[in-house]
Image (tube, rainbow, N blue to C red; front, side, top):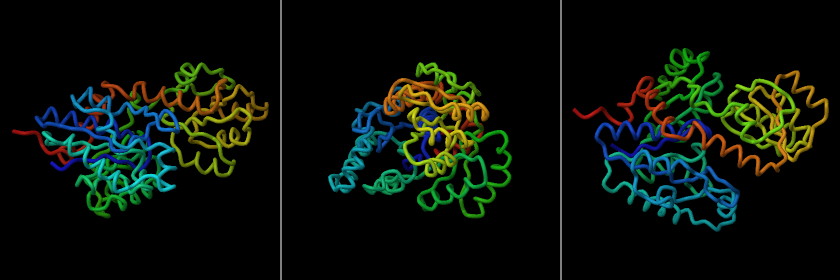
Amino acid sequence: MNPLLVTSTAESTGKTAVTLALARIAADRGREVGYMKPKGTRLRSVVGKTLDEDPMLARELLGVDAEMHELEPVVYSPTFVEGAIRGREDPAELRERVADAYDGLAAGTDAMFVEGGGDVRTGGVVDLTDPDVAALLDADVLLVAEYEDPGDVDEVLAAVEDVGDRLAGVLFNRVGDAVYDDVEKDVAPFLDTRGVDTVGAVPRDPDLAGVTVAALADELGAEVLVEGDDDALVQRFMVGAMGGEEALRHFRRARDVAVITGGDRSDIATTAIEAASVRCLVLTGGHRPSGSVLGKAKDAGLPVLSVPGDTLTTVERAEDVVSSGRTRDARTIETMRDLLETHADVDALIGPADG
């Protein structure tokens, strides 16, 4: 089979679990499998110290015998991007580095699984978006997307256009009960009219949905300033460092986020309270916001946490909580495997079982 590259319409859509679960299925079907993540995007710091546990988990689960620099040849940090913009990175050399690493990893395998970094367009500054990587490696592409409302189909179609003829299909992941029938009866048939195959719709599973507000507060050692839905699940984090209007646009486009911002940024705090997608507010620096901000949060039922550390340190710790918890272990991959075998056309992606 051609290598399969798993990309997504947005960050944190479950690419790792999908990629490794498909690889495990292929391995159990008698294939010699390999894994690669060309762009490392899960970083501990802006200077590029990698936090990426995905390749390490792949080594453990798939028995891949390779070093981190082979599995993840480009560390796509803010410092790297800045250097690329200033002309300090050579796209041709980077492409050669990725291709050489891939050739080494693919030797002796008959099924290679390539995990995208960030979203479908991440890497554009050095001509290494996921579609670029797919062309470089002659890979088919699985597009992972989430669906909450009809507007999400716009993002799917835009990503499909980016991928082009290499698209193997769209997999909707973490689909909520309220919209599951919509995906099957409306969205998938609509995409079919556009020549786009939907290869599955994986229902939301509580074990894969992130970290609860209560667990996040406990891990951060946070003081709870306003109580709310402690069982709400946080899947990603956004840093409130922009103006209020811009922040509101970003928050509204996000899904199941915790907003992390300085406790003295009452404008950002107020904006986060107004955004339906925000599950909790984490205030840094030990600053206590005004009574009016806390009152609005209480009225909205939005939990507000306070931590003494600075924003960068808190973001790093919060990302650690999610990345090292239930969503990044062998049990997660087995859960995703079961979901894919039940709710997706696995044969269309990796071929039927031998015999």
